[in-house]
Image 1 (spheres, rainbow, N blue to C red):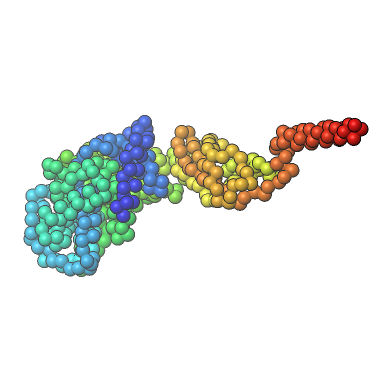
Image 2: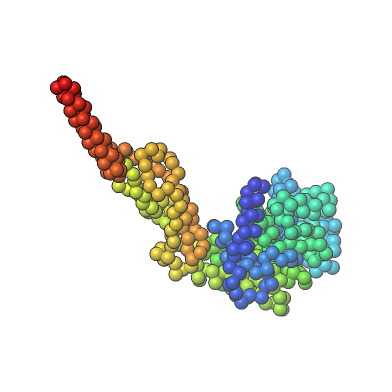
Length: 408
């Protein structure tokens, strides 16, 4: 797993350099980062490398650590006064758990991620590890393990605190990791949940924001919101439309009354790309890629075909005749080349964007043809004729000498 995330980290770094920074969208969030998850491709970035408070997006890491450090999601826990202490004074969001209520770890994870319950966060930290400090230490250890080099957690709730920060590039690593866990992905995509004791229903903050503001965003699958004074309105979300899958993180949208600026920004960003881009076919399976001439064989050329279909996320106006093909490799095929020989690579580009590399491999060797061999080398025939002529001349001279010797 760690090896995979090293690859993802390198991708985040280089993709950030490559991203569409020239694109300007009318959004209020100070920080934004959009990925195409199918291709691990940055589509839009705004101050994605900047350190920022992330509010309750923090609870994604809280959920990861809780999940990975419990033996069973069915473990029963009783809510205590200590689990709720100080939450009202901190104006923290809560799921609604009450003292004496018996719930499971699964109940707490739903309460943590859907309504962003700080009560669920504290209960988990008090029960998963020996103490709260140990839990937060595990959060930072996990961040280090994932390669989140610009992240530090001071608490499990995301409340504003000095030294509690991240970057959107780091959040993307954390969020992606959580989405690879089937249970956490299921929770993050849920709109509501009823606890195992049937005494509490929790609803996703995303669902509440959408319903309250009559926002039509059918492509939005779920995610995690966050709000604090320093972080503003924050959102980590996933979406899917037209066979394309997206991940978007935004922070520091202004809090203007009940206006959900983080969701409005998400709507602006998602719909720009949904309306202007889609997955396009670049190469059909068995489509011809290249033709190479042969040498010393009665086969004049060998054609090479794609062994798989290639589809890429591209502007809707894309047409195949806009593609640029570049071949780097051997320019002809000879009979001494064995089957399986790698001849070179075809690269496919579109408007200075690299789309694919196709290895050109010889499937079977070609037969040698003697006639073609000599046709390709007329100088050899001339040389042979010259040798024959010289031989004849020498023979004539030898015969003549013999006749002269006999006459003497």
